[in-house]
Length: 116
Image (cartoon, rainbow, N blue to C red; front, side, top):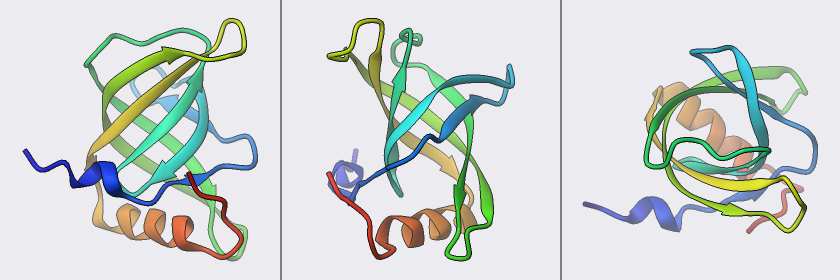
């Protein structure tokens, strides 16, 4: 298996971006950082370990227009956050349309970003 996804540049998110489970339409967490190959969420409770999820989030494009992104994601790990009742959860993308990958790449590389 190729582990190149672990080397992708990750941009921190400086504002509230809710992430939805498309199967339940419920907000499951907030986006902490994003790369074209995965993301880190802040959640209030852990998910099922090593499971697959269909997730949706919206990010502004260069003109400030919200773009909705759907991804299939594999939950890789979870860890308690420093704040009580919060959990960090890392995901690897397993299914993203080419157009959404291109948008994420542009968003990550846009000027003014802070990186992990």
